[in-house]
Image 1 (tube, rainbow, N blue to C red):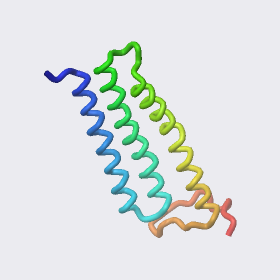
Image 2: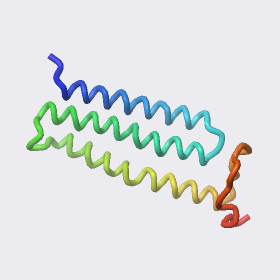
Image 3: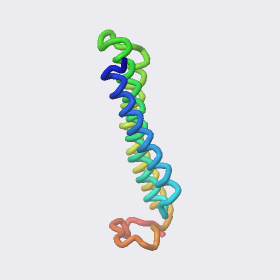
Length: 119
């Protein structure tokens, strides 16, 4: 018999895989490094966290809420680490690319940091 934890776990897994797939499509299809970074960091973060959330829910369903299982604690720790570091690293990579002179795509309308660039 399928319980509620398995249904929630499968739903989170499917949502996470969809976000990861969209991030990879964005990596292949978007025109410049800035758009690609946006797609990979935002959607990749949501996708990885969805998969890890699925693991946490599955572990809660298997072992109960207390005491927490080691696998659930590891999934929570990795998920929090990804949520904290991925957007920051994406921002720093984009900033470094901009300061090094990587151009925006031709379709970009507004460049708010034009005066900060060292050409």
